[in-house]
Image 1 (cartoon, rainbow, N blue to C red):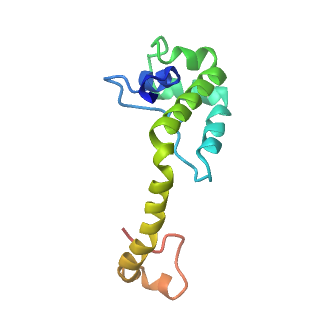
Image 2: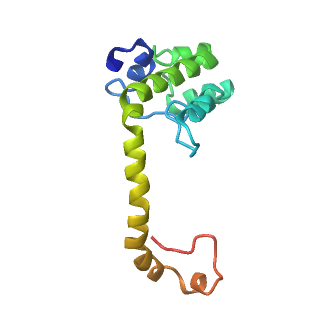
Image 3: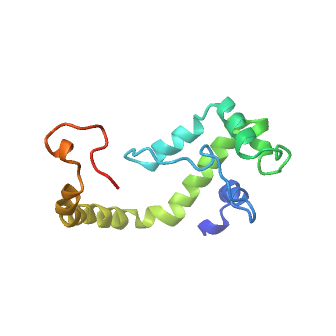
Length: 140
């Protein structure tokens, strides 16, 4: 069962009770690739100096914490293990359901566009509607 997969250990260590801040290198934001494995390759390629800098910024005074030691000692291996953990989670918890989830999201986009499209255009600034204006034409 995927929950008992030893490759998940780096994830369990990250989300231990009492830890509320997580660096971007540990929980990277998706950048919109076609497949999750491209995202994991980017995590594996994280610059070791960036990892060390993020540990210092995000976890001040915690350099001796067991969950951080691997990222300071061997950032490349630690990021590879974390990518393996995300891959194991993906394979067990998401991938079996991904075709259905993706289809539902893709079906929802046109519905939302039709629903919010007319209302969204009334929120746009007059300058944008005329073709001028800045890079952020709609207010929130």
